[in-house]
Structures are given as structure tokens and as C-alpha cells.
Image (tube, rainbow, N blue to C red; front, side, top):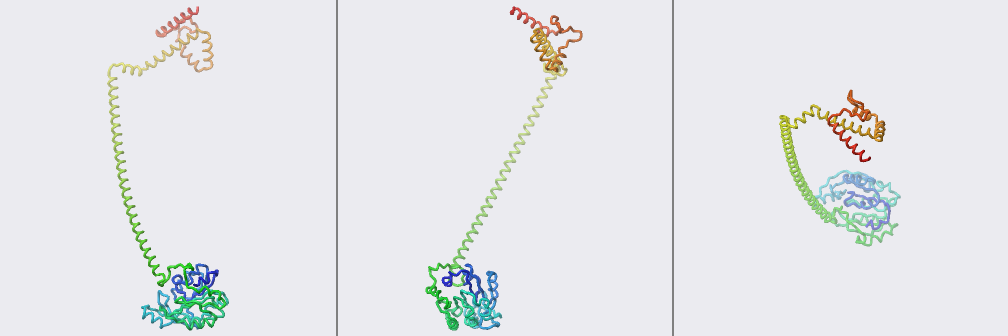
Length: 408
């Protein structure tokens, strides 16, 4: 109802007397979330500290308001909003509902003194909920210095529907306030200078207000919602725990299968390595046996007077090498004789050898006659030759004579 009347106000100001919890049953919480700020009056130490923690940017006055300054015997009913300065109410709550209480001395000031900092400032709403001391709080109020647009006060005896508001009503009406609405617990009054707010209180809360339950109420309004939400959360938690357990089992099974697969792969690799090692050992043994057989065969071949042995002996003695050299020299001499018989070839050969001195010197050494042999300049005189060279030379001469006769 307050929001319906004041939602057009930006960054408004409020005063919450008997604020109790900063969230549960809080009248100011919705306004605070919309950027409003104000002052909280809360005498119970536990709730005053909670307010300071939740609203560090607001003023929290840990005291009681009354019509005079002094010390109030505050009967604290722990964990509830039923703490009261009226001893009869505290005893009734204990006798009727079993609410035990603890009495603590609490500072007490008139509202005009406690809220002097607000004198002359715009305050958009003032709520008074002090469990039976509402009239005493208003008696300490200076209605000329502090004029909230809307004032609401608790109008019933604690924990009952019995109305008790006559004294507070007289004070408010005499101060120029008009009663506009009762919600079953609180009575709403509007200052005469803000009569434009009266139409907002012609109907109770309805679907057009777009109201949503916060879930932070201690009354039956939210009991079913909270219980349902708690049941759903418990069911979700149980389902989540079961899913986690199933996932853990699956992970353990997968890990076990992976370890088994690793073991099988390792064993297969070891078997393959062992088989390869055995095959390598067998191959080495076969190679050794083959080498021994070859050596034995070689020894057998070399043992007798066989052609192979004669070849090996000739190689060892150097006879094959010297024979090859002799035949190469013979071929070169024949080629030199043939070239010498043709002037054109001789000139070409001489020119070519002059360009390659090392080759010329090598050929001169190879073709040089033995000491005492005839000079090679005379083509008509045969050079000393071995039987093989002489045979090749005679064949060459025969072919040259045949060539000349054919040309003639």
C-alpha cells in the first residue's frame, strides 16, 4: 500500500520505528532496493547489529522511543518481533504462547530528540510498531517539526486481533492527519497537506498492483511458499546427490576398465618384445651358423690344389696385377704405333697430350723402351715385344696392308 501511494517518489526518505530484521518482515527493504534511505530505531541488540550489517549506509538507533528520556525495561523475546516494553504483554505471551523473555535495560528518548536531525526535512513515511507502546512514542513526537506524508501504526494487541489504537488515533487526528486505511494490523494516516495520496488507499492490494511475495515473511502469508520451496530444494539436493553418486560410480568403473586395458596392452607389448627378441636371437644364431659354414667351405677349398686356391695364391703373389699391367702397356704401345703411322692422328694425339702434360708424362714412362732396346722413332724396325704383343702387332700390320691394297 505504501508503494502504491509513493512509487512516484525518487530516492525518498523513511523512518522505521521497531524495524526488527533488515529482511524478514521488513517494511523498508523494498524501498531500500529502489534507492530510498532512512533511519531505523531498534532497541533489541541482535536486530540492531543485523541492520547495521545489512544497511551500512543507513542510520541505526539502538534505543527505545517514548514520551520522556530515561531507561526502559525491555522484555526481549528472542528470535521474534514480539519484544515489548509492556510487562503485562510479555507475561501474557509467555503464559499463552510459551514465549520466554529476558528483561534488559534500554536507553529511552522522545522522538523529537532522537529524530531531531530530520526536523524540517521531507520524510515520506513513518512506521511505528513497538508492541503496545505506540501511543507513548507519539507523545514524544513534535508534529510541527517532523511531518511524514504517511504514518502507519500497529493497532492491535500483540498476537491478537484485539484493537487498541484510540490514544494514538487522537494524537494523529489532532496533528492534522486523516485515517485512510486499515489492513487488519496497521492503521494508515495521511497528512492533510498531502491529501492527493488518499485515492491510493481506496482499495486493498490487488492484481493490478503487480505484487510478488518475497518469501521472507514470518507469517502464514509465505509459510506455504517457503515450505514448498524448501521441499523442492531438498528434492533437488537429493536428486543431485544421487546423480553425483552415479557419476562417481561411473568414473570408478571407467577408471577400472582403463587400468585393465592398460594392463592388457602392456602385457601384449611385452609379449611382442619377447617374441622379437627371440626372433633376433634365432637370426643371430643362423647367421653365426652360416658364417661357420662359409668359413669351413673356404678352408676346404683352400686346403687342396684347386683352381680357386691357385687364383688366391696368384692374387697374393701379385702375378695377376703385374699381368694386367703388362697387357695394358702392350695395348698402349700398339695404339701408339698405329697413331704414329697416320700423320693426322699423330698430330692430333701430340696436340691433345700437349694440353695434358701429366698424361703425356705418364704415357712416356709407360711406353719407354727397356734399356738397350731400339728407338721407337723408327716405325720400320719392330720393337721388342712379348709373344702376345708380337701376335697383335702382326695382325695389325696385316689389316693395314689389306686396307692399303683396297685403297690402291
